[in-house]
Each structure stands twice: as C-alpha cells, then as structure tokens.
Length: 316
Image 1 (cartoon, rainbow, N blue to C red):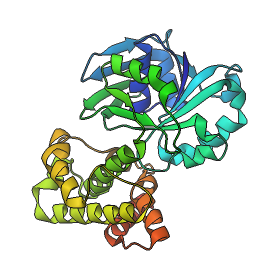
Image 2: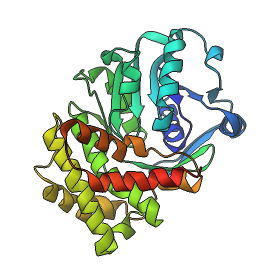
Image 3: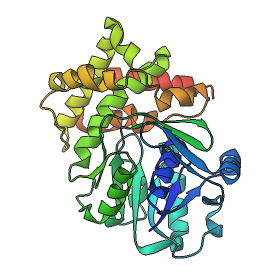
Image 4: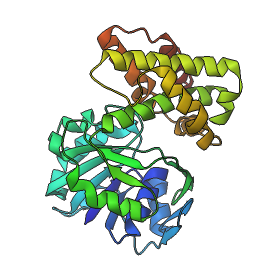
C-alpha cells in the first residue's frame, strides 16, 4: 500500500508515522523548512499512545509533483489547512498520473464541505472525508505530539459511497494506537465536530484561552450557546442531520464530556493567529453562514465571531 500525505503539519506527520508503524509505504509532500527538517531528522509521533520514530532514510519527501513517478499511489491523505484545498485539488488533477487507477482521496480536515474542491476534478467514488477529533500538536517541524484523544477517527463519504474499501486504512491507523472506524454517517460526525469547533475555536482565539477556560464564565458560555443554537437551526433547515434531537441535548455532552476531555487544548485557529497565518474560519463558521444564507436562517452570532477572526487576519 502506497500513501501520499499532503500537508506536513501536526496531523500529517502524526498520521504518516502511524501508517509507517504498520509498514505502509508513505511519502510526504512538504516544502521549505518543513521539507528540510524531515529530510534531516525523519519524523516522530509522541505523546499519548505508543511513540514512533523514523529516520530520514525511511521517509520519502517530495516538494514537486513532477518528481513523483507515474502510477505511484493507492491513497492520498489531505492533511493540509483547508485554505490550500483549491491549489491541492488543481495540482492533483494536473498530475493525476501519479495516482493508481483505483486510488482514493481521504480528507482529514476541520470544517464541512471540504470535499467540494476535489469533486470538481474527481469522481465521488474517489473522494472520502474523515472526522478527526484527536488533538495533534507540532512543536518541531518533524515531530507530532498526540495531545488529546476523545473518540475514534471516523471515515466515510458525504456522497453516499460505500467506504468498505478503506477498511485496511482504518485498521492500520487503529493498530497504531489511534482509534479509527468506517461509517455510513460521516456527515453526522462532521457536523458534531463543526458544533464543537465553531463554538470553541474562534472564541478561544479571540479571548486567548484554552477550551476549558471558555466554560468558566457566563459570558463566554452564552456566546457558545448561541453559536450552537444557530448551527442547529441551520442543520434542521437543511438536508443534514446530527446525533442529537436538539441543541440542549448536545450542550449536555458538550459541557459535561467533550470540553472537560479536551480542557487544556489550544485550537489550531488559535495557533494560526499566533503565527500570523490565515485560519480555517471559512470552513468552520463561514460554512455555517453560507448554508444559513441558502435557507434564510439568522446566524448573527456566528457572523460576528467570523467577522472578528477575519478582522484579526486582515493584519497578516
């Protein structure tokens, strides 16, 4: 099995090391200082679960698609920021001869609807999505730390395609220590993650605090409650579904389990702002706003939070 991981951040390195621990043939697409660091040091996965380390001789790194041989890969993992999806999908289409005939693309990203960029060029039977709620942090360019684990990765299709051909991938990730399963309800899992990320990521970034701190005062809790209520209004108006009948039911698990399990976590949105790079807000609250416009739903709180993050980005 040959896998190309596009996006050498915390998630990409963490998953690459996980797969290599199960003897998968993994290549990483990386550029600049990250490519140099991996070529010099290899990659490492540390933190929760078993730690893995692979030398530079064991890790293949590409910085140009033209350097990749034809008919190379069975799977492509998209682990980049969502802001890169337009460029990555175009490049994969331009260099699609690097992919085997029965290849599959699996998108490991925050947000909803990230498959749309790839469906412009690839068939719906070739594009799958993963709900990833495991926390990864990259403290060095070649090291990924598993910081938080609350539920297994869920892999499936937003286009009603059977994910059974991905069982080997799911089994390998699970065997590396990180739970991973196939599902026919990936849309529900992705909306569950949207509820979680849209409530926590932008507000934690604006207030410069971890997830847990947001639950410790009535003012930030009120904002999160409104974000969650609005998202439920949008979901209920759309063709999508969640695992909960209403927002109050979701809030119980949100405040009593999900946030406590990830109390110390600092979001990727928060880290991006600290590094002064564009965030994934367009795939998070931005997706809620776009869908709300389709159905005429008021999402004023989501829009304010979105505008505040975009205002911060405006100085980058």
